[in-house]
Length: 304
Image (cartoon, rainbow, N blue to C red; front, side):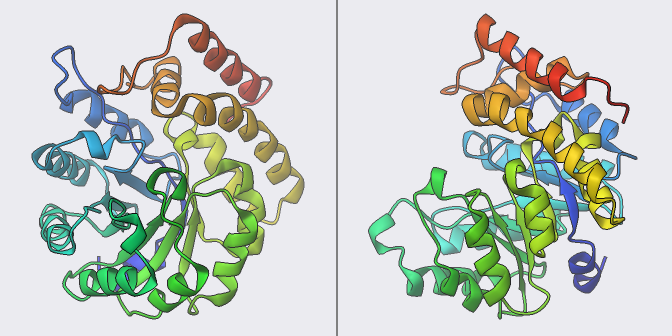
């Protein structure tokens, strides 16, 4: 696809797919491929590989790039393959981004550098992202998740970056609806905002967001897509009802248990989740019961 077409298709629901591991703690390529194949035909806008839910920071470069190769073999246009490539140095981010593009990435989802937090002010972040965007051939999507990185990119910084011709969007995962609305108001026309918090999905869509990257879409893609499609069709009542069903999946699975909870939910939903890579710990028996109950609550009486 051309970059113009990629930006046009940057909308809808994207699962940040998990990385299954086998008993030797190696990436289980077969299970990863099978998960992707099950997403086909569910109405997703595409997938995110090597994101936070995919345990990107626990993967080495070869593992990340191999996942991109597998995903490219399965994910077909118009669905998009978004790949996390953010590293601490600008040079290494450019290098990894180019390698991901060579293996089929449609667009790059890029965390801000965050180890040297006191020095990551607006000029540093703008210089970093503009240098990256000017040195890769595919679109760049900014990734704001301050609860993990400790970096709060200001609305003015994001607005400035939105005017770079190759910085096309933002994944905003703070869950702060007011901040999302500020970005939508200040960013350049056509700049795509994807939210990363299920609790504000419908409100963000109403405000002008293009879609979402949701951990819940890994194990409940039809429900997440249902909210988006009902909104797009103007079916306000249905969209509200489906949004309410999403809430326990966030409040009782993703927020308290993170990647481990999402992987457990995948196992309970007919996908491959398994255990996370150390230092993350798998769920205990009681937490598994909480996840199972939340899934039953969300799906009660629902046919999707």
